Image (tube, rainbow, N blue to C red; front, top):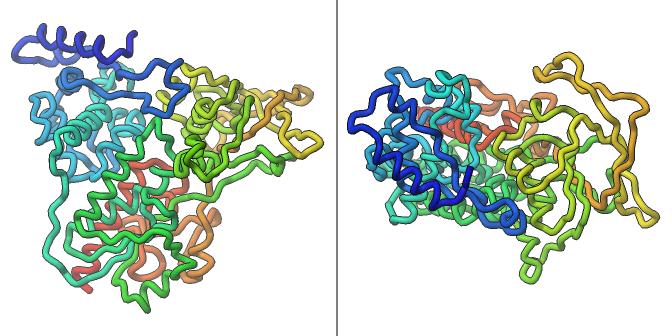
Length: 494
């Protein structure tokens, strides 16, 4: 099917014109899912521009008309921040786009971001009755794409989307980290009238939205726009401020006299496999590789102070969204061949289906049922290849996925000059090291009250990847909102 914007738009216009004035359930069920317009794969794999270009107005309206407006909408239960999905979708179906925006903003400050990067197929869309009726989540109403349209429409039409702030309370709250959890928490706490100061270790705000997710999936100007909403609301944002070094949690509480603290520092400590050769020149954690490209724009070689590692043959270890991001970034940085090396099959991959399909369209090679066992190097200590061992799938393990079993004697060496390890992240231990009273589990994640997200320290709350481990943007936001609600209640009684 064509992904050309104008072709898809004209098709939507024709379908809209053919619909009856009053839509019944069979009419709605008969409307096809609207495809997302996107750049041609052969073109986009050589630029950093956004891959998906967004619905036209006609497509958004037509897709919204597929919604059955259920009396007991299960889609809302699948949304970690509790957006009233049927309400905003109904507004779009009736071309009341500004009303749709305000419905979304009641629960989320980041519709332009969540509409792009949230795994809707595992959350709201997984529960959509249209998809359930057709026994295919791919047939669900494209809630995320509609949300993105609303946010983009508002930006194009300069619609004010700054939440109102209550009268000053005199209470002060520190937000540690400016990623999705911190943004959500800061917005809800500031709306309640409390003074909010956000501390960010990097020189730019946005956390994983800025350093982790590539430009071609999430343009950084959108993140900047959302952060500026916080500034407009009166949130004080301080960058180059590393909590645990610049100031400790105890100092913020007892010397700087903050009434409450929310910690949303994410999971930024990369994991490695522990195989021979990981110290060779040309081996990167996905964190470093993506940070150099995304945050520091190494691909703009004439402007950037960060060196770019020029590689022709790149191996990526892992099968999640970060692995897809690293592989697709490597293509855009000039690699001739990029391989995803994954020890299971595509069915077990945790990456979003859309991201896997985009990577395949762009020419990324997938070596399934292959386990990296060694990275080889040349006489100068630079990567020259990867030795892999073939696998077969056994019984399900603790993750619910079938366990890969290595096949002895199936080793082979494949030539590469760069390796990117994308097998997950752990929590940065810095705050725990400087705050002995905070309780963590064996993985280093903060242990919190499940109802309030309060840590073992009174008045200190945490949420996002620092609690969940590596999760998603919207789950982190949900944690930020839950903690903000508890903080607001705590401050009302303090």
